[in-house]
Length: 141
Ligand SMILES: [Fe+2]
Ligand SMILES: [Fe+2]
Image 1 (cartoon, rainbow, N blue to C red):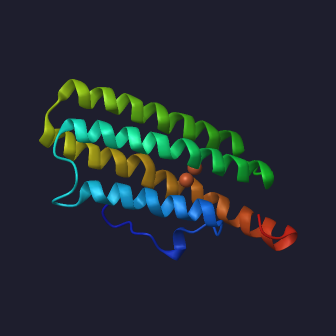
Image 2 (image 1 turned 180 degrees about the vertical axis):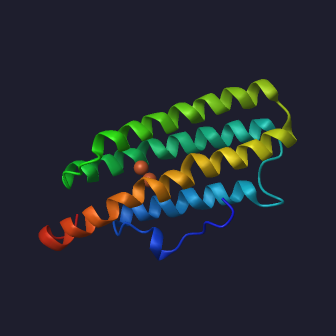
């Protein structure tokens, strides 16, 4: 997503989660480069498939952390993960039906920046103080 590159302010200070977020941002940023990887609508659907596969593990890792720290917003965060997966699957069907590469690329870039980068900043980062507190009181996760 334009304007969002990986940096320490995005960290939750859990190695596996941070590494996954860094990878996801790199995948998203790649789609918005002027000579990015997406040429056809099929590239778009393949990217969504790769992302869905990747976030299945990633969301599970986050949910495991939330359980460990007894996170108060666990349920709403988990629902957000379910919704993100549904949106990605829906967008994939739109791409397949439209089949217009140029449009697909523009829409996909916008969709992905909303889809995941916003979730990272607006939802995942809310866990940061809870994680920090847990680590301070009980040690590393
Ligand atoms: Fe995340
Ligand atoms: Fe999340």
